[in-house]
Length: 167
Image 1 (spheres, rainbow, N blue to C red):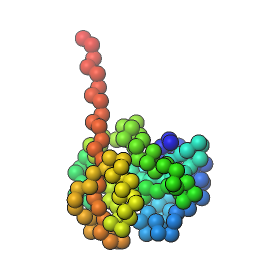
Image 2 (tube, rainbow, N blue to C red; image 1 turned 90 degrees about the vertical axis):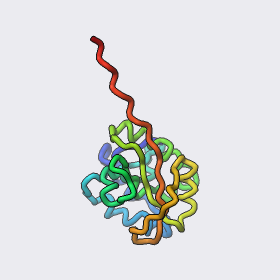
Image 3 (cartoon, rainbow, N blue to C red; image 1 turned 180 degrees about the vertical axis):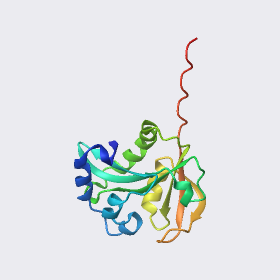
């Protein structure tokens, strides 16, 4: 599993547009075309690639704490995370989530935690996030349009300090 900024290869956006999601996922993810066209400040679009094929999509939000007061300023938000319905059941979401901390470090994003919210009705996603190291805060986010959501975060390793220059 490789993770890339969507803009890294023009063919990936075409492939992502061809991904389908189960109808029950639609309310939680949103309209894919709108997400791909969106140019919201602080939100970048990313693709999950397996064997050269786009299999999933997600967004990283560097201003997550602005719209989600429960998150500290140093937090990054994971949004719109999904694996296409044709690729589900293969462990790809798990592999992508496990690769996320290294990917965030590779991007140079200075975040201490990766936050997300997951709808209380979406137990499968909640369990997946827990298996991948996300911790539930025990609080609910009530600001979404589709009911209460669990607040979860993944602690990210601090970036390695720059080596001291030799004197």
